[in-house]
Image (tube, rainbow, N blue to C red):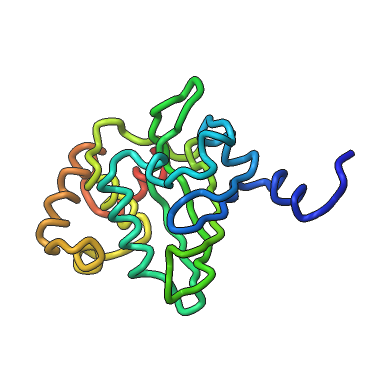
Length: 185
């Protein structure tokens, strides 16, 4: 039986955990390694960018974190991530990410982040574009077109166009039905 200490608790936690500095992974636990199909040396010292489907999604998520961080440095969302290696290499999946920046004034300087793989409960349609994935995630959070547009730096009308595309792809007649299908997919 392993000694019960902070390192053991970190390594064996029931959720994925990552310590970061300047958007680089400084340390991660076994759950993260299993979730992303990676070995420790593939992640530690690397940018979080490798866990995103595209460079643009990595950049825009970083901007969203800065804009949405609360006064204590806390942030949470659901986003699409990418498996790094193993039999599911390159697979995209829904992931709940939450955590905190240790200094809210410098959101990316140092942080503690948890990752929960949602793929057993939520499937991702492979044909979604990066922007559709972002808008789907924000719709799931309950944001309006106006708020999504503000968060992404696009017009509410552009958000409505993407929402209509998502509704066609998921066969939904209304926004609540789309959200239900996104959650149940």
